[in-house]
Image 1 (cartoon, helix red, strand yellow):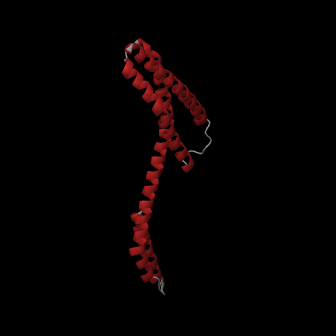
Image 2 (image 1 turned 60 degrees about the vertical axis):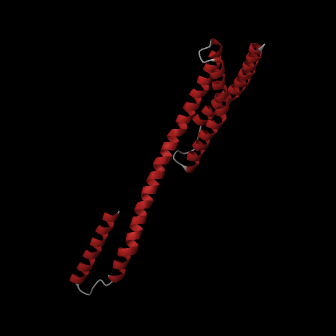
Image 3 (image 1 turned 90 degrees about the vertical axis):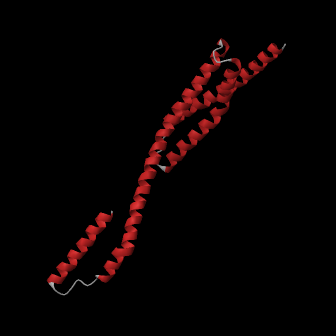
Length: 171
């Protein structure tokens, strides 16, 4: 009697799993098609946000069917012939999930590169701004007279060229 109850329990778990798995595979298939037809420009905040959301959503809605399937395999036995269908469907879900995540991870890697480039730029900009605010601004405030002779004007020009070279070294 216990064996019959256990088998009925496993059958109910299997029905639940296959129903959820069918729905999940349908959603994953539609998502693959939508991702293939995305018309957002690459490396934009909108595309980065969309791919991040897709990754979160895929992990979220595949979690339960995967958990149910692996639970069935653990209870019944992974090597049992009765679990071959569950294994096949689990593999299909995992493969589609991995494929979609790989598409999204490329965008995520691009996003990280853009973020790093932006952070590097802002750091250099801040260094330059700080330098200008400290020494550059003071220098320009003190050296405003171009002189009244050609020699004084050449010296003034030379000093400003040196300031420009210092500025290029900072950058």
